[in-house]
Image 1: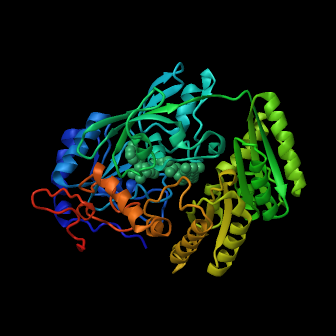
Image 2: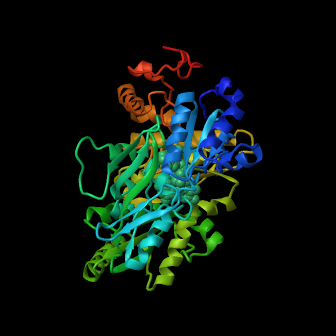
Length: 495
Ligand SMILES: Cc1cc2nc3c(=O)[nH]c(=O)nc-3n(C[C@H](O)[C@H](O)[C@H](O)COP(=O)(O)OP(=O)(O)OC[C@H]3O[C@@H](n4cnc5c(N)ncnc54)[C@H](O)[C@@H]3O)c2cc1C
């Protein structure tokens, strides 16, 4: 079960006054009626919901800054939100918190081809960055499967990845700069169009900070020229182990595919029934491999990749000859999460990362856990990065099933850490995995991370209850902001 900070009754009582103050800052963007607030009561970790105190939808950085400064003065918690597609509960509201929705800040401010970048507001969707530059032959590489909906602000906060991150990196490798508003309303500029930066690398700290350190109000994104040739192959295997071994062998051979994705039999069947991408029906596992670059390089990599796959037992290899076939193959992969709705109404999407070599053993273990918990699990994931996405499907209306699904998911993530991996590859810790942080970090590691949080947000008002397994007031870490004699988190026992 997920624990969030207990709501402060004094804040709950002041709701009307807070709504009035926010309306003075954002006259046309405050939502206070419960019926409309319900639309914001959860993100894509849909098993958990909470109606926020209020929702405010600013349209520019001045308004964001004024909202944060007001909330800091009044000791009110803030939860930033982009499109609400987080799978780890990062945008789950708080009963006494203002939900700060960035979706109206959705303008592409500049396309600068000379400096190969685009400057965008945080509510711009991931897919619209590529749309804005594709006519000039460029694209934005990080491509989460949620890209038609998720926002750049959310991508930065989660350090999101996608199918093509194996070769081109996650958000952090494609982020050149941000404007960032601190909880006290102060605005920082980190990075920019130039290469490199002086001082400490705070841009890397901000990327992946899950809305805990400040609010992104502008981003400068690296855009890349479209490679002249892209080829996609659909490779079938009659054992999961052979597919896993092929992944490790491709990387060991020095080939870096643009994408290397895996799906197991149950996932193939479910996706096929959902959107008919034409996957081989009798395969135990498939790999979708994509190679891009200059024609000679692509031809050579494809030849070597096919040799490896055949040598390790591939039962068929389909080379997608044209753009339509390629799009069809990818449509199945991109729809895989949604397709799970055909099996059960609820789903937990795990996101552990493991060393590639461990893939076959970890998949065997996950199958044995599924049997133990009596639940169905489909595997679809970014195999090239060893970033697993076991999809546990269940029905939370069946008593005990949510708890079993969560215990199953926790076992998978503990296994990932035990195999030398990590708790999250791209979806963030949020509320979903915070109880497992101790599996990966020592108490000193965690205290140091929390001190960093305090350096940005001394009152612990930004997205509290996420990422860290226990709530600490900054005083326990050597710092605390006391305002009007009130301690932050007065409801917590002091150590
Ligand atoms: C079907 C589906 C497929 C997905 N596929 C992928 C995938 O392939 N790869 C991947 O990495 N993820 C994937 N995701 C997860 C999700 O889309 C990403 O985490 C995405 O980056 C979240 O963006 P968002 O705009 O929806 O952010 P939200 O869900 O609204 O928020 C996510 C986090 O970011 C914070 N935040 C949002 N905006 C800001 C801001 N401007 N400043 C500071 N903090 C902010 C929030 O507080 C929260 O902690 C998928 C999700 C779904 C539902």
